[in-house]
Length: 457
Image 1 (cartoon, rainbow, N blue to C red):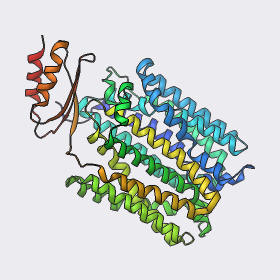
Image 2 (cartoon, helix red, strand yellow; image 1 turned 90 degrees about the vertical axis):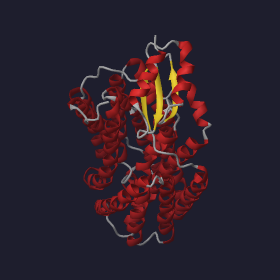
Image 3 (cartoon, rainbow, N blue to C red; image 1 turned 135 degrees about the horizontal axis):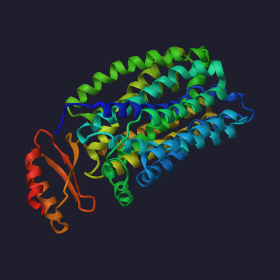
Image 4 (cartoon, one colour; image 1 turned 180 degrees about the vertical axis):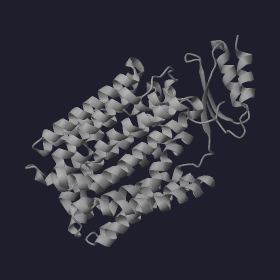
């Protein structure tokens, strides 16, 4: 197995896909820090409609991201990504030209309909060798994280200069930029990896929904993004009420984000090294409760807002960074794509419900009502996480079993699971592939290849 690193084509694919997906996510996130302030220019403005507008993309994204991934298996990755970016750009134009909040919401719903996550990840897998795939995925993940940070920093500045309509026109331009990157920069791919690595398998979804360990992670990401979106219905207004002008909000977000990473990164390194990721998750959840409790008690003072945002982003960034590894560790062999599909569906559903609920509670009871609602859900999540197990770190791989007769596949699966270093094995003759979860330090690649060869004709 070649461990040398990304080759030129893989680097180009990683950069192109990180840019494509990052530009789209930047367009979605740009609205979050400013909608509560500049949404007041619309004649039908209400806090509830602002919340719906912030989270509306999550509704269609949650419903369509799994089907769009399946569609990419049928008609190709690039056509689905290109079409998704076009729909996103069209939704941005609708929102930019809207004269009411209801029109903005329609545009945001259309933006979410350009659900390209599954197709992007599948194309990333197609573009890299198996041992280099995690690195390509990591680059894409960093692109998404960077887009969120950039949105918090530049949205308040752009909002002051060009308003809500201008921001939506800007997001349309970002989508067009993504289309150009896909067309001009993304290299051609010459393979199609087994889709179970990156895309859901329909017949598995019901079984995984009943998995209590994955269910706890799905509920966790649902609550995390619900709370984030709900808070951004109120946070920009709290900052204004505390005396910080909208165009200066970037100067609060920038240092608090930097300082949150300064705490989060060492925290993650220590906990991963000790294999205490579940404990780390609970600590991060507790930080979220502390942050929102401070806001609930002292919402009118700027220093407490700064403190709360800093504490919140330590916990939020830790959870965002640790969730993918926890999901990979708990998903059964051959089911990572299905587990990831359900996980991201819950994430986007949380964003939608968080926006709507945040707007509703703010309209009914102000900031305190939103904070109490969010804290109650976080406490429920902490209680639900009590049954989440810490599992040993594993790596996934798939191997060809071409030439193994169907009648021998059960025996091969039984033999594989007995080998040192193999935690789980699923053999799928219809795909000509075996999916493995392994402990790399105990895994003997040559012995496993020799074992498979004994079952081949």
